[in-house]
Image (tube, rainbow, N blue to C red; front, side, top):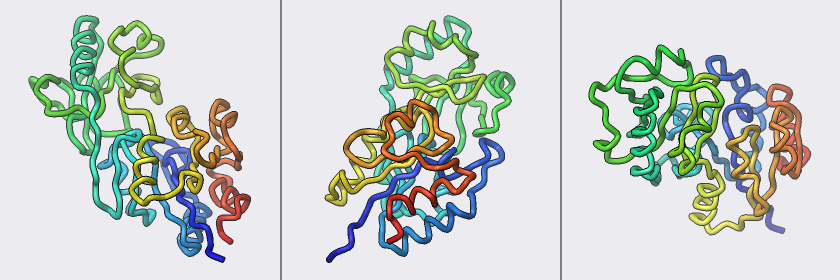
Length: 260
């Protein structure tokens, strides 16, 4: 009898990695689980909101060759970037124009890199962010960018709800001082990977913990929520494991029989 190959998709922060931004580490039990999954012949893939460039080192460190990045709009297979679908540029331009009118500080990610770009130093001074580096590009104009993958608005809650143009774009708040305007449909990227291999969606298993993982918690496949996951994600999960720093990935794999 042929052993069933599963296609496993893992969020990074709070799922594969513990500790939070700036002090992230991969639990030993997670590394062991990934090794055992490879030995069992399963397909492993990262599924992250991070840009492909920002997540690439994690991919290599953990031995992954495949990744859904950029909130579902980027796909990397066998270590090669297949492509990244950008945000609707005109909608982002309108967003930035409104931010300029209202005095809201902004930054952009116009390329696949580890940096965000800002027109001046105010974004970094306001946020003191450790998630990614900000480079100042004098005269930065979103209309001049060939494409825009992400935007960042420096504001505290609930300012974002007063921004009209933001209603036309996907966004999420992970940081007290700013919001991420970025694609948020990890299921879109997962389906692209599954279709690439001609695999049955029912053979996929997804692991997540945060609000931006809700998009991949769909009924097409098995959904695993970490013990540290938000309540909304747990409500949609097929299985809830222990916290990321309490052997969550390993325990889920045992419970689902993935090492057998």
